[in-house]
Image (cartoon, rainbow, N blue to C red; front, side):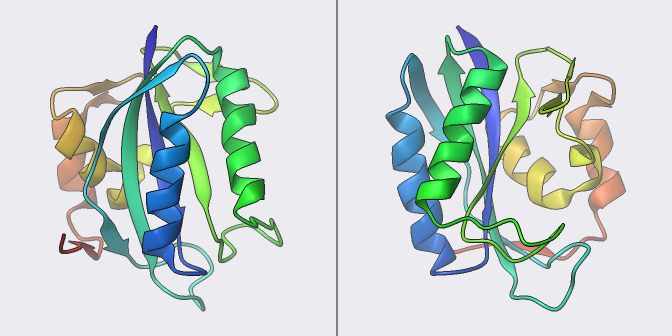
Length: 160
């Protein structure tokens, strides 16, 4: 079994509900055990700014699935939630990304792990910090050492 961390985000069609349903669906993946989820965090959009704020979280799973098979399941969940990829950083009903897959570094045409730029994004690092504060991001170092670099990004934990 490999411990993986999935970054979740949504800013369309009731994002809180989208993430809640996605957590449930992650728990039903084959050969996978749902371990924990972070709080929900509200964040400002990155890249394309003319869109609603996002709701983000991180889920921790243990899986026997290979990374690319796990990705295929995540893309299927996104499709069922109505995800449409109009342009980079577009608004979305649901975004599921493999942030970390064990200690692996993966760089294939369809998957890069650790997720590109995760070390620059508070909306990934702060929820991840709730679940695994002592984790090391392969190629980037200890999570605790990356947190000061995202301290200026607007992000707030949501109640409940």
